[in-house]
Length: 262
Image (spheres, rainbow, N blue to C red):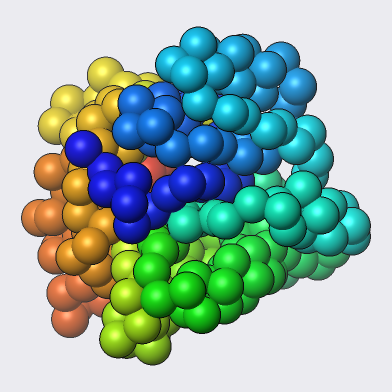
């Protein structure tokens, strides 16, 4: 069980309406931690909020897009009166995929702003307060996509690589101040977002994780950062970190094409 004395009394979950984010909300509520849930979709957001309120915790919801210019200000205003001991940034996504030189540069910027800029802003705000208090936790949800470049999603893969290296540096900076930092690296996970993307979960040999399981792994390993690879994907990450980059890229590209049915 997550340590409420260290990570309470409030947690902020960006991307907290469904999938892994909803799983985090359920498990934190079970530990008696109050929640601020942030998401774009009102329906799933309300559904998750009602489910965790039934466990006896207080829940605040913010229906907003982290790409909106006033998003971070709104989050600060909604949390300035409470002590946030845990930030879960689960909002990163590949919001736009295209061959880079043929794509829309502004939409690529949106991928960067969601996966990097918003993450930095929230981590800076809440992490600074945790450092002053001498306790807390920052859990950044990453992806195996950040271990190897991928055609059509080069910007997203690069953003996820940034996230992992950022988490490592932040872990070094904050560990002596009682603040735990972890990047939770996800592989293929059975979430509504991946289902909507049309991923084929039946591909032979594909490791498919469940949201409840990866959220549980993340919370269990939060004190032991800086990086935890969820869902039994350690070997996959190791292979993607090998020295023969060209061969690795070609093999991964062929596998990705099979996964998305191209």
